[in-house]
Structure formats: structure tokens, C-alpha cells
Length: 133
Image 1 (tube, rainbow, N blue to C red):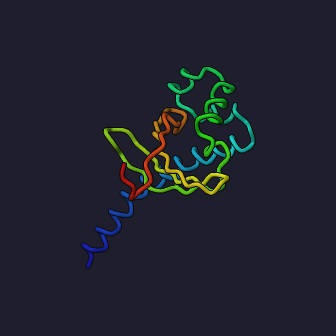
Image 2 (cartoon, one colour):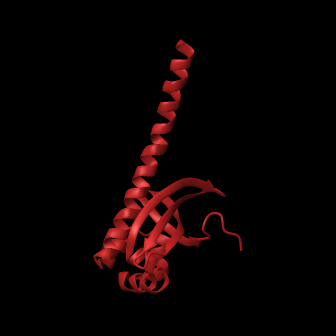
């Protein structure tokens, strides 16, 4: 019985950093989406990694890319966080976004941890689960 309790406590302690990590990542993505909803591209741009910031150079360029290429992120009706997983050494957060027209989109957010916290390093549109090409 003592071994079972010790095992459960150890598992809970090991899961806590992962849960905290997941919460921090969800907060970053949610905060960026909130900034898009407010058309605050300066704040939205602040959640992007240095690589993304180097590519787009300005919040205005970044905002134009999101409006044109990711309208479901710019104006979502609903956002649901799914699994956080590692793939080829990168950490990816899967997010289900329902757009203003009711269409469901699945996106993968690649996250990087820097000295000042988690940043979004890439976003890709994923195939809907259960569908084949």
C-alpha cells in the first residue's frame, strides 16, 4: 500500500511540470488570439518567436499575413485546446478553432521556450482527425 501511495505521489509530481507547461502554452496562444480579436497586432506580434518576428519585421506585416492566411485565428468563434505533444524534438499544441461561419479547423502551434517565456514559432493547418487525403 505504501508503495502504491508513493508511486501515485511520484506520478503526480512528475505530471505537475507538464501541466504547468501546458497551461503556460495555452495562455500564450489564447493571449495572441485575444489580441487579434482586438486588432492589436503589436501585442499579437509580441507572442511570436524571434524567427517569426525576423520574417515579418513589423506587427502590420504580421497582421496582414494572419488576416489573409489564417482568418480563423484572426476572428475565431470558439477555441479548444487539444493535445500537447513532441514531434521530432519540437513541442506542438493542437488547437481546434471554429470560425465565424461555423467551420472547424485544426491547427498545430509549434512552441519554443525562451528566457522570457513561451513563444509561437510556427502555425500550420492540420487535416481534420478521421479524414484521409
